[in-house]
Image (tube, rainbow, N blue to C red):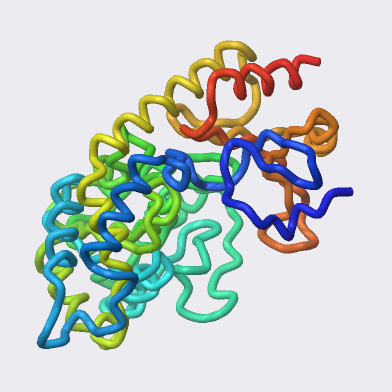
Length: 347
């Protein structure tokens, strides 16, 4: 059996191991940015302009202006009043929940990502999202508690299932709701790349805060928080923000100038998805506009491996759990890659 855990090359649509070329349909590089030469060229420009990294606090008296610029670009691009960019999605989530959990009663959504946890094993909530919604509405509306902090993923990318947060409109108007949504797998892909923020409820008693990793679809080692001016200003005064170093300025330089690159890659991804779905008339579990397909057959990955095709196949969230077999499409896949995958499935 080839060693798939010691790969010494970049991930792409193809991976070469022990002289054999495998088509790769896994990971989270939905837009194929790590192998997008135009994006790489921008990143190199950024390295030449700003250097490799910046190990100083954002509150230092001497700063590079690109961080404020990137936050303004991100806020405008994703439809938020303001943005805050950190060195990772994990830090963005931790900074947010640690600051906001003090403001009200906290409720975690089903299978909330560990980056959102305040302590280890914070939540073992594995109930269905719709059941959690009904329970949450009843709990909040029947309580005398006035301020609530709801913490949830925007979607379960493993199943996959995109969550609908319109239920928040059913909560009593005299409740103050802070809705913290982790959109790491949706930003750059869902809703024409804007992500979950566009569908979150707009209501005076609801404060929406979106956190996300930029390392997946967007291809940048950084994290982002999208919220109101007031909320971002509050988060920038936290010890976590003050004490943390920012991400590489070079990556943010590429992000700022890559709007057309992202758009072109998203169109290619959508074409790949349409080709795949139309050819197979899929009954597998998947969500419209999201390039992940859950396979019910636990032996599927081995059958595809015999045809030199690698898919995402591992137990989650615990090593003893059932193996999840998923096909993940990316913009780095070419038409012939999709054709080979379809032929292998239909064999």
